Image (cartoon, rainbow, N blue to C red; front, side, top):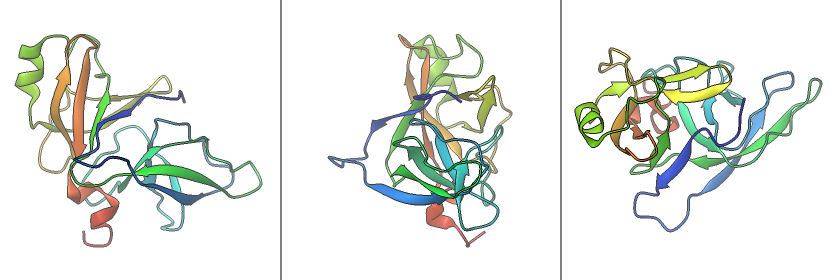
Amino acid sequence: MSAGDIKIVDLGGRNVSPVRRFVTESAETAINPGEPVVISNTNVYVIAAVDADGVCYADYFVGIAAKVSSHSASADGYVDVYLDLPGVIYAAKPKTAGSCNTQAKIDALMFKRVILDLTASKYTVDTANAGGVTQSIMIMGGNPDQDECYFAVCDQGTWRNYGHG
């Protein structure tokens, strides 16, 4: 994967984003800074998000990696994560280039619930996804000069609602 695919653009009124360290499993994909992190199916580790993550009560988003993970092929490790909290807004490129390159296009996407896309080792927001209440990535604006969309993660898709689905 590539570092810096997703960045925080608004800390939700905070001065800093809390960073927490989580255990990563040996032989899993490396996690780079700026990549989304979710709770693994084992409920012990965190892993890099996969294609089409962002489903309520299934892919529990923890936050964005702050550093490269330290696990190896044979040993568990750790990753520091900017913890997702209410009000935090992220920025990422849309899956289809040009989908967020005008304010009118961004306005038409406001509050649409979609998923993350992982194609060619790059995380993007699938703005063309049909959307719906089962998706937890909610578009919250964007930057047309950068062809970026801004998004928040709905509570039903985050660690804050883990175990309540």
